[in-house]
Length: 415
Image (cartoon, rainbow, N blue to C red; front, side, top):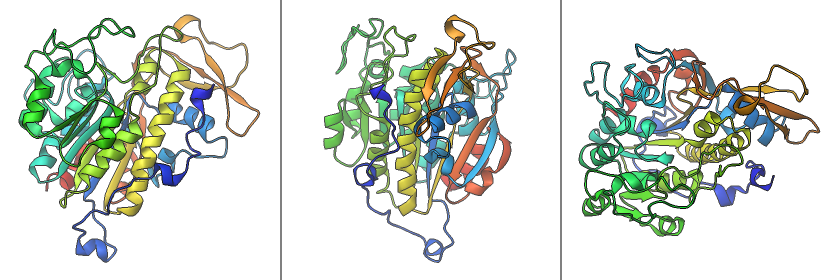
């Protein structure tokens, strides 16, 4: 299981954030009264308490802690949408609650239940003079990042969401997958139509060549890891796959988590660019693969995605260590899979097929092992953990609705 080598044993010099200390530190900060100027909001899509516990056992061991769990403040968020058909949220409604402070229906991108557009934190932060960015292993126009930077009655309108990024919210950094939505049908870009890994993928936009438009608007466009490394500071658009940066097929049927650019690398690059803004920044970071592999009840790949998320959290934590005016938040938009961490007994209530147990997986530094047991291939209504570091982090103690994120962040990002 070489692909699951522990991610926590790594040299700081090779992994730390190599960015300059942000300029414009306030007098209050210099006197120890640090206020939040930067926000790094990290979403483990589909990540509930059991996902974090499984990753802790695998990567840190019985007595260990993940970086995401060592942040000094912890609490819980409820995730209920305002949907007449269900009490269980999807990513669109969940992220819209964070970005707007209003609950809405599943599939909505920052519109209310009457389909009226709502102000979003990403766009408001930009209007307030902050730098903004989004980093994800999903399509950059997928539901969670879209909720912070666009409005749509239907999350599926990803080409229009891309258009809004360029014309309306104008994030400075856009890194992830989803090149298909930025180019017209029949006009492939860096990634060919109908690739062998997934022949259903291919350019499908209806808004013209948005990559060309982004370049005309001053974005430096990159599509490979080498190009990202060489990219100059400034507005940056990076699309590294047709769709997601992984293949979320059933176990043993082409399920692959091997992004061409890691989430940690994209996060570090984004911070290097955004930190140049004297007024501060807002960065949204997302590991989508936790959700997608949990939908397939794929314990092996879910653990792998959790490890990559942990690396990105470590990048953010290290940045905040040298920039105390930075608030770091780690949470999930909902829980996926109804996951439980169990012992390795051979007889229990587990089913077969999709919901069969996965494992056993080794516990780091121990002869013991654990299984992962699933109850559904869908989302659940479980509350999700939230951990935080930096100014205003203490606001996240206790249990709150997911709209509370907006209540805390709005005064920071809109002033």
